[in-house]
Length: 167
Ligand code: SF4
Image (cartoon, rainbow, N blue to C red; front, top):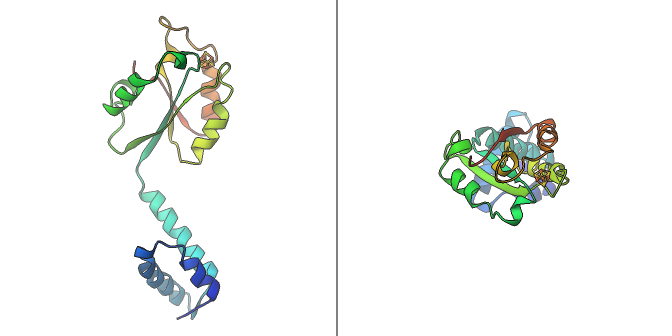
């Protein structure tokens, strides 16, 4: 099987410990197409198929928490993390294959930076965003008056929302 120089260069992007396996896989696929030369397109196609396969097999649930900017001045977020680490209260639905990938404040009323941070989290495949319990409480702190807008904005971006974290 012949390899075009650009194809070989592209192959070098594959981690060394799996490169020879990848090379065999690509050559087999090119052979099936009735071709005798591997092109850069063949390598990219194989890489794309591999990425899609990995994504399909990845059952990790990625979650993030948005919390009140005002409350963050007095709360380091320990209760949220404790509840997540022990999978309690609003985190009890998750198994071990769940990662917390973001913990951020809304940026101040009316939740001015939430949309930008959700965009950023989408690049990391976030599945669910929790609205922290401090945004929902009625007693210790005032309930967030912008809660519904923040929630709808996240939902519109195609991310699930759960109201609450540790109580
Ligand atoms: S928008 Fe809601 S969560 Fe954000 S600072 Fe204002 S009251 Fe707190």
